Image (cartoon, rainbow, N blue to C red; front, top):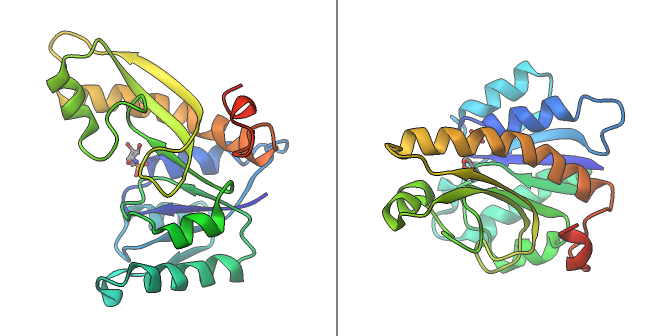
Length: 200
Ligand code: GRF
């Protein structure tokens, strides 16, 4: 499956996906890394890994999210992308884009969904005093962070944890399960139409 990774920042999950996809039997090929910020650090890392990159700056589009997405969609289609993995992509996508790519659009979220949708998940987990935290690979649906789970990983919250220590523990698991989640979707083992298979 020709796969694009969408990023906004440093792209550590992107690197994990690129490295996993180098295996001969991996069912997804990373053909493009695209960012909504021309200065996203991950773009350089993708270039260094020999992956084609594109940047579609959202700022000239102002509040017109769909116009930005149409420009992004054009780049994806030009590159014959079949599957999209969001990896620290910090733009909320409109129903237009999500519906267009539904079933072929996945995300990694740094919490055990449905807990802590949205941002600042580690701070909120610490604030709530939960004993376990983690990350979720899920299909993207129009409602934010509400799509069916493909894979989750748990980590303990330890005494003395702060946001930095907890996010580092979670990030390690993100790098482990995101490639697995991408493989499940690219191989057809996890499908949005069949939530039972998606949670297998
Ligand atoms: C990760 O924690 C991811 O779960 C969240 O944004 C962060 C991106 O980090 N959606 P990176 O750019 O992959 O290093």
